[in-house]
Every structure is written in structure tokens, then in C-alpha cells.
Image (tube, rainbow, N blue to C red; front, side, top):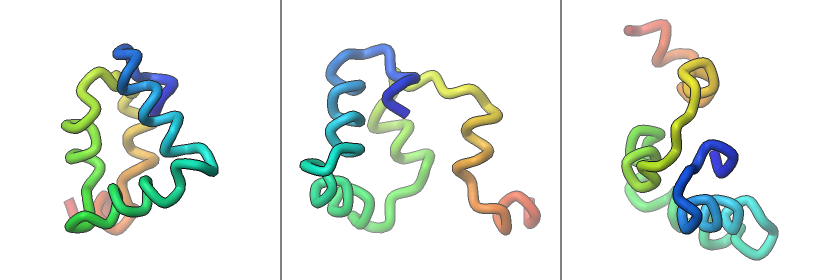
Length: 66
């Protein structure tokens, strides 16, 4: 996601989460009430991810039910 972030502070935070140093923080961020993809995009509003990439993040059963 950091590749698609246009705000530098968001890009840096996403890169930190993807690093070995940020692993524990990423786990805590993801586990707070089992965060959804939509909530992540709300937390990082500068991320302009192509729709095709976004579809890859959505679980397949969800797509089949809707």
C-alpha cells in the first residue's frame, strides 16, 4: 500500500509496518477489533490504490456472497 500513498507520513508509516522493526506494531494495528480493509483505507486516505489491487485484498467468500 505504501507504493500508492501520496502523503509522505502515510507512506513512511506503511513502510514501517512492512519492515521487521514494525512487525509487532502492525500486528497490534491489525488486531484492534479486527480492522477491515476499508478501515485501513480510511486511516491512510492518501492511498490511491487501483481497483484491481483492492479486489485482491478482499476475501474471496465476501466477493461470492455479494
